[in-house]
Length: 468
Ligand code: EPU
Image 1 (tube, protein in one colour):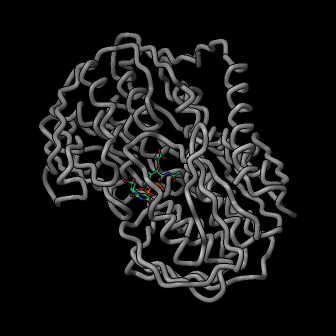
Image 2 (cartoon, protein in one colour; image 1 turned 135 degrees about the vertical axis):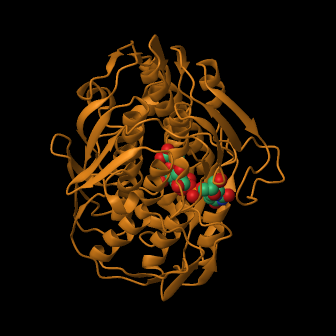
C-alpha cells in the first residue's frame, strides 16, 4: 500500500513557492544525451519520480550519472553502451522507453529492444506515428508478442538516412523520437506537421549545444541536419509550465494569492488568457508570476485543449476544478486525448456539477467526433465541494483531486500518491508553505512481490529473445 495524503481544505493559499524544472523536458534530455559520449551537465533538474525512472533506465544502458538532488544538478556521460535492451520492468513506468529507439539507433548496430509503453492511461496511446517516422529514416522495427507482454525490436544495420516525412498528427513523442534519430541519420530530415511544444524547443536547444543543426519553421516544419561532431553541454532545464499552472489554479480557486518564482510568461500565454477571461488576477514580475483572487470568478468560458500554442491538455483537469468555483456554465473540449475526463465522476461525488458528452462541444470538430469517447465536459459553478476518500488514477487527475480537496472543508484522504511524486517535487512541502492543511502518511511498502515479478518478467523476455 502506498502513502496517503490527508487534506483539510477551505483555507486560501498564500505565499511564495519556486517552480521546478519541467518533467517533460528533463526526461527527454537525459535520453538525448545518449546520442553522444560527451558529458552533459543539467541545472534546475526536478527531483521527481519520472526523472528517477529515466536515470535508472539510462544507467541500465551504460550511463554514468551524478545527481545532486539538493542542488538540482545532474551530469551524465555514456562512454559506451552496455546494452541496447531496455528491460521489461520499465514497461508501464512512463513514456520514455520508446524514445530509446531514436536515441540509440545512430549509436549502435545492435538490435534495440524496448518494452511496450507506459504512462497514464488517457486513451489507447498508440505509437504508430513514432514507428512510421523512424521507418521513413530507414529503421526496421517490429512488434513481437512475448509471453507476458510485447516489445519493439528495432535496428538500422545499414544506418539511417535523412528523409522528408509528415506526421498525421503533431505528436510530441513522435516528433522527439524522430528528431533524435535524425541527428545521426545521414543527410537532412524534414519533419512536417511536427509538434512545437516548448519542451521540444528545449530539446532542440540542448541538441544544438551538443552539435546538431536544427531549424524550426513557422509552419511546424523541423529541419535536422546530420551531425557527427559532438560537444560537452551545460543546460538549464526550462520551468515546468504544468507545475506553474497547477499552483496558480490552487491560488485562484481558494481565493488566495501565490507568487510562483521561475514561472515563464512565454510558456503560459494560452493559460493566462483563460485566467483573465474568468476574472482571475495575475501579475507578471521580473522573476515569476503572481496569481491572485480578484473578486468573483466568471464561468461561461469555452476551453479547447490543443497542441502548442493551444491550451494544454495537462491544464484541463485542474481547470475543471477551478471552474466549479466560477459563476456560470463552462465547456471543456478535450481534443488531444480521447479519454482524459476519468476524474469527473469523483469530482461529481465531491459535489461538482459536471456532465460529460461524446460530442465535440463548441469550437471545432476534432479527431474524436465520430467515436463514443466522453471528450467534452460541461461544468456549472459555483459548487461547494466536500471531502472524500479518493484514489488517484493518473498524474494530472491526481493534482485535480488535491485541488478539490483543498476546497473542501472536510478531511479528504487521497491514495496512490506515487502518481503525484512522478511529476510534482515536494508537493506537500510547497502546499504547507502556502498555508495548506496537508499531511503525508507513510504506509508500509510491499517491495518483495514487485521485485519478484520484475525479475520474472526479465527472465521471460530474455529467454524469448534468445530464441528469436
Ligand atoms: N498519438 C498517436 N500515435 C502516436 C503518438 C501519439 O495516435 O504514435 C496520439 C496519442 O494517442 C494522443 C495524441 O496523439 O491522443 C497526443 O500524444 P503525444 O504523442 O503528443 O503525447 P505524448 O508524447 O505521449 C506528451 C506528454 C504528456 C502531454 C502530451 C501532450 C511526456 C512524457 N508526456 O505525451 O504529458 O499530455 O505530450 O502535450 O512528454 C503529463 O505530463 O501528465 C502528460 C501526460
